[in-house]
Image 1 (cartoon, one colour):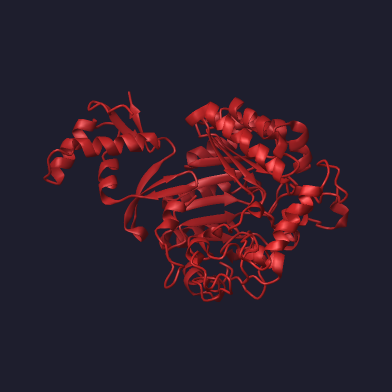
Image 2 (image 1 turned 90 degrees about the vertical axis):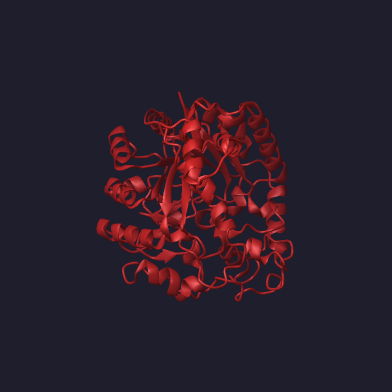
Length: 92
Length: 385
């Protein structure tokens, strides 16, 4: 699988919707006749995938928010997985 | 397909259940088709007055407040209701993910545009077969070309093309043609769902159950097709449970994640559950969705595992398949608390294997000695083909 370009701009895939569900106390990703309940780190990444921010922006934002460093490999791995499942798509 | 959600509750549903994540509104039992495999009740013609628009909107609000998030709009044919757009708009505003499950009959461009503007998320279009002759025969209508036009419209409005084809003895040998049709239409998802034997399909079971050889061929064809098209088209092949040795975890357990509201407002833990004896399912006309889901005896009846009989009661797998399907246990054995006879551990398993054996011995499809009964509101002998 190809590595994600740091300049790529991921967005939630067509047909998917990300929203907070109070009853489940979690973010969920909704798609035709299905749902994925997201854990906190998945939600933290996906809520930042707005088609405007680049992967580098997202990593920087997460590192700032969680006062962490070296998140690039984890974030890229998750984005790659999410692209594979079409939860995300890359905007040109 | 709420597998992920259901997987979070590995127990057998003891204690307070979670919210009804999946809400299905069967807006009407009216339908222009007369499919021989329909799971609607065979006496649907005598079901009471349909809920009015305002009543459906109240159901949406109450269910959403409980945590319902996936909404199925089905029937019958939901497009028969001229307030479908109003219902979709309200559901969208409330935060539901809205799925329209339709035969396509009645889906004009005007209505599709209005539904898209109302926020409809997803459309699942059903086909009965790949050819006009079989599609029209199996639904007892002339709808094939209309459906093809609707499929093109769905693409035009940039919805993913999701086709559902119910498989059975009379069309399972056409799987290659069905998949070819789906590919030509640009389908992204194809669900090849083998018939489940409830309602009209139960009545026609002997004619609809495929042979093992038919099933094997269909699976082989599907596997080859998958290999060729790759991720361009995702194909789900739902094996008929009569050929399994363990039952399906029906509805992830009754009353766990799924709530269905029948056209007359009766709340059900599964679309087919109205048939279960000894239960009075409450109506949303008389009770709130919250009290129905959490407090009604009918919804609590098959929660947990206290109701189970042997071999389920002491089975280590009871938390995985919940004893299978209550409706199937009732239809086949007369007691809904029995183990689903699909399970090879059930003392009634022979009822399933005998039906499969009979299917095995039957001759050419369509040379049936018993006539097929097409779904019809008159539901009587006069509706036989």
